[in-house]
Image (tube, rainbow, N blue to C red; front, side, top):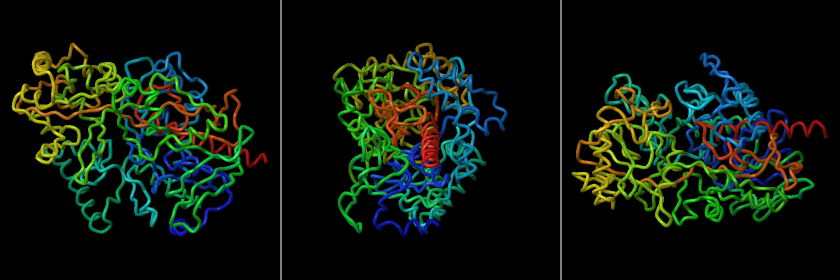
Length: 582
């Protein structure tokens, strides 16, 4: 089946279909699979030369309260409890219609995909909500991750599957973000972990020998691969290197799109594709739209640079198209994007790649300081909260950046950013300048350009409390999410340990994002709304193209992909109903 899809590459695009999907990330593929299962002829057009978008390089988690997996595991949760939690997060910006629709439909959507596609999800029973301590929050049981997948099942299509950026792999091998990752951290301290990792490394070596790259894909790549494989087998036509140049129609109804056919195809130039029952916009948001960044990101408005972990093809094209046909963009969220601290890893061929800092900051013996030499936040909070604190701590005109600090014992035990723990040597990271080192705190401060006197006083004050396992300044290690990413073997506080074993090390962090929250205004059926609040017939938006139902907040792992898949499912069902009615 996959081979027949591959044979269509390079052939002329069909002139019409039932549903046309713009973008091939999780939301777009979810819509395509749902529509195809309902008997619709589906075309997916993708601007990039690969399918998967930012979803393919993500963690692959979805936030879905009351899932089948959670019920099987005995998790005591309810839709009402989840609603209370999201309402507490969003406050006066709470989008009750969208949230109610999501909480009702998300478990149904997951069941649909597990019954009708190759998707399989595993529960992260201990993966806490990011603010589990507030009313309705849960210390685990709401986040699920796609199960690893053998990309060889894609046949020739595996060559078009987007892989994560190399900085987030282990020398090219993908590592699952759940229990698998913990085995890698325990490889020198557990025989079981050493054996587990050894098997994965041996498999990867064989895959590199025979295929030139990893075939066992995890996280977001597994999520995308499973959906794409199903789509191909259902006859969905996924066209890469096919950017959309405009919507065909107006506020009275969208009838299709125009696309650019790139060189090397049978037909070059522009082509219109008629979509009889709808167009779904799922192109990933606006992360690389520089004008929108300058308007909506507070640190960029104040003069700082910004970096993104989002696929570089995500430039807000669909937003401009929606404005042109009378649609509206929601821009008034408290946060326009999902923030994440990034370090920039030098590449041998030049330039650098982004490394997102999810799991190192909460480890005992790791702290963060600005150039002033002062800490500014609880380092163990979520990545989104951490960058919010960094933005507030940055003076206008200064770069929104900080330094992540560890001593020798800590970096060898846990690593730091892209630097791996023992036995991987530090030499390459030091030689490239990614990792800074000083034999004393003052020496490290000089290398980094940090105020040495204040830095030494900061570390001394932190260490005096850390010896007792407490952090009076920022209450580190006092929440379920803090402790989840700490080291449970380190007591009395899994997130707090002194920084006192020279030499000392630092990695520079900058403000970045994982995707955007501001987006196209839609109704709970994923239909795009015009300036009067009326649905534009035939036009849907899902994923990061749609305004986030979380209203610019980040309540837990998977609050982007969960809604993307669910509203992709909802949009396709609506299009299928349109076909039945017409």
